[in-house]
Image (cartoon, rainbow, N blue to C red; front, side):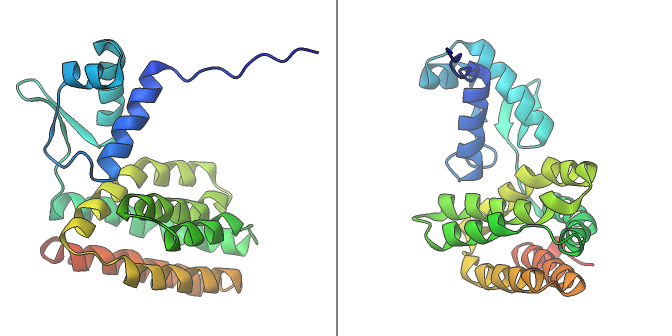
Length: 214
């Protein structure tokens, strides 16, 4: 029996993922212009998939579209960081508590920590940390809750990228990740949720002290 080949990702999806990766790993910095013609030439595509990719990224909060300036990478300031992390503080600890109470398999979180430890650079470490947090909330048992956290995931990663560029703090955060996972694996749902809340709040307070008051 012949099997159909896997579908090739669309050009728009390819461009979208490439631009997103560059933004979330610091290759494209906040405020940087995203010129359609330049990006089209870089990726070997027409302007149409680039335009569609930028519209999608604007919808996720990574790109800002302006009638006069065109598309730019979103700027990160204390107010933006506070908004994003406030959502995480409201939702993510509760999602983790439910994951632990439901005896969720957290092997993916363990794998992500190993990836972060073995990361060759800041970009790899950032991506691994995103995987870690998602692996904690994804099995919470409420798909809508998980999707809501997914919606702010990219913006949170942008905040951490900017913060790390100013003051690398991943060693401290790696220790906090291990403690969160230890509590979760031990079945301590409340303890894990509390540690995660302190982890999220502590990061934004250190990185953006003027905009992170409780």
